[in-house]
Length: 582
Image (cartoon, rainbow, N blue to C red; front, side, top):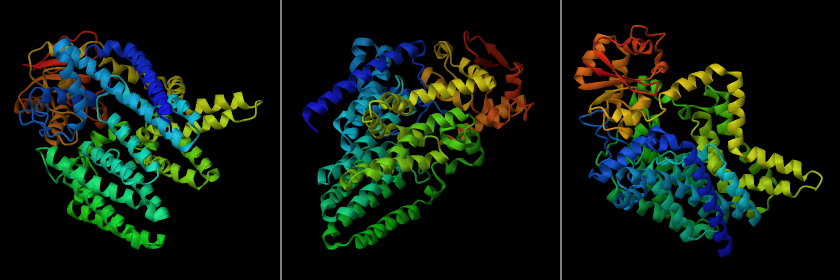
């Protein structure tokens, strides 16, 4: 690939990123201007960045306004905070704190979006003709649900993890060498340092690397050594400089003793494989030794940290797992989705990319198959995750564009008589936003009650609700899981509960409060020194309110019948109801 090609890809990607970001900002400005960000995680991330800038330690990830006064340990690394924090600190002397934050939450995801589009084009060039670069950029820009991770205000860590996965993919798609191995090792270590959401895709990518090592043998020795060395060194460097103060073997959900042990064990195993490669002349011998070392690394990690066998949410307990995790659409499988449209929107691009991959694999030569292998491995891992958690679609659709660009090129090559129809079909099935719009519209027409319920929930987020809430004297708020992060990120108040799995004590207290009879709820509020109640009609439906628990405080609030000790406070232009405890 020439320098001119790389520059052209980067400029085109930047133009698309700026254009779409401007359109998204214009569309969402009514909420963005109040720093009411798209997702609850973005609100909490902004709060974490503010706390760090205000003097909280780099290693202290605790959110002290969640379940106060002790606070709750978060599982988020500071690595993702570096970019928004740098933007805020740079712009604050000129723009002031609020405007600097607004600029940062727009610019940070836009920069990552431009990089994501550029990397999509470069991957398309690796597996096909250079002409596939532009279609890959366009398809990646429209690739729902992946493109939703780059919307203005999306300052959570998922966009950065997409970019790290793309860089690792590109490195494996190239010919072996210690530099490409080191890049893969660094990307895996950084991604694990940020969170484990992409662990299945990265494991599949390492599996593809293992297959390349089996086939090529000595050609992959340098890359194996580079990967093992960098994965080990980078992981130990993160352990030395970015280890959180809350360092417990209780969890297997992010940068923890378990993930560090596993990463170092895998790094050392690859170093041994690299050293032994000259002696392992037959692929069967390489397979036996590699599988043996991999099994030892995995077994040692699980034996040391058996909590990993229960998954990242194991320590939560069954009630909170059901109430919180099972009610998050992206945390349940594609066939369990309450809305058929959501399942189709999530699975469409990944499914089509897998089909195109399978068709191209049959016709490709040996070199093309080896270049495509890493992409196929990530598609397959994402598809398996999608069966159990919808979030598998994010990473799968994020790397679908290079393969779908080949579908567009194949349509261009059709006979002139059929070419227009083939091109329209190729572009339609490759446009993720088209799946989003069409399936959403169809379901809205067929199931208007769902649309009405969605409108009621959305009414609780409209207007400058958090700005108005912030006008009241600071205090601790008792509210539903969905609102807790927005209370913390959008106001100066604290919240007992929020949808974060390490906050077991506070989350259980929130459910106990709203599911109890009013007088019992008042005693719980006194225990937590709660000053306010924030409630949206429809809250706690995941646990049977109001039908299964008609005598609970939540059921009374849903009927608009607060107890005498809850004084209504005005919040205009919103469906939220706000009360002060007398």
